[in-house]
Length: 141
Image (tube, rainbow, N blue to C red; front, side, top):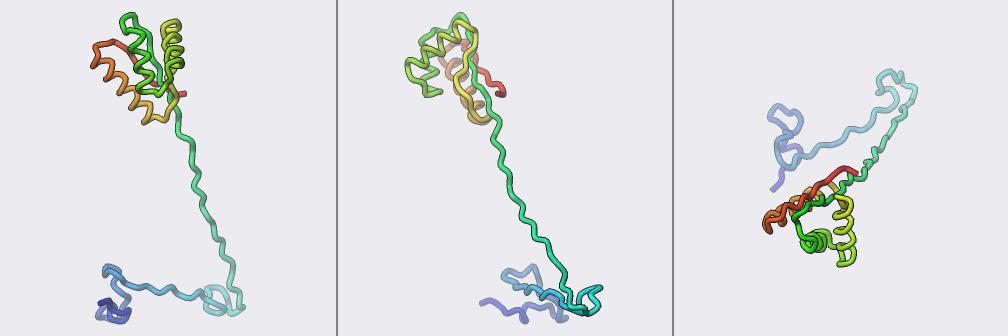
């Protein structure tokens, strides 16, 4: 059972207790005419400015995930990593692997920070598990 506004007033007849759940507060009527401070009874109610804030969303920073070349990791292992963790097709994975082999570094993809960090960790863990020294890093684009 909920109590009415009168039943929620303090014993001294004050305002309702804000600590009680379900307390109802009434909004006061705006002052008019002579009630307004400095109004002097002219009937001027004044003007109010209502501002609406708009939330601006920014695009997140993007990070490149890069594979680094080494002399020990087999090329087929690199292709497997590209297919497994970066969803590359066979031809695209081979193209990236050759680029890494010839230029020393190759881009696997561009992701948000959290996704890039996860992919780097997954690739490094997978390489260590298979005893390969493959290096994977991320850099801000």
